[in-house]
Length: 175
Image (cartoon, rainbow, N blue to C red; front, side, top):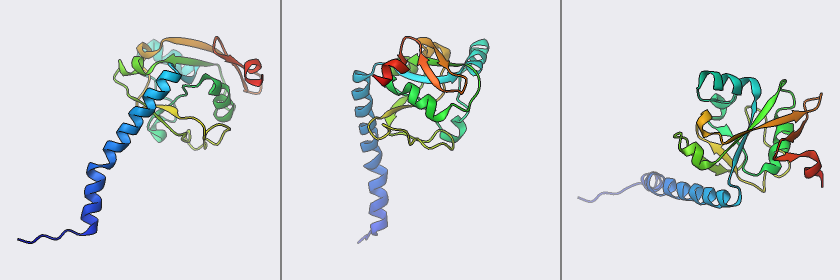
């Protein structure tokens, strides 16, 4: 029996068996590299939403989770104010910054991968430095047990992010 396979068949076979393995390996390699350089994962959160999560002992999902399919974060603390000022100046209220690690998230059953930037909801990630870093994408929500520390965030009257206590402030960024 002489069987001939179309190029389409071979292409589908290639995608099925080779591409996923290479993508996973690249993600694991990126994760190991960034964990070594930056041991923590940071997520800016509205205080009101985080307080509700704590009261209910539930898992927090950001408002854009259903659209984005993951929770945005940064491993490089130098980007916290840039991210806050790019995406969230229009969002009223108090904010906090959650400090976690890939391991603390993993202990709650949540995987974290490091990838290029992605939009937050409908807002493009076109801030300075987006092409020089990989960012942790948390493939699920954040349970309070994954959080190692909660940091205070200060903003001015126009919503601009100024400091994240014990992590970064505008004086350090501008030097």
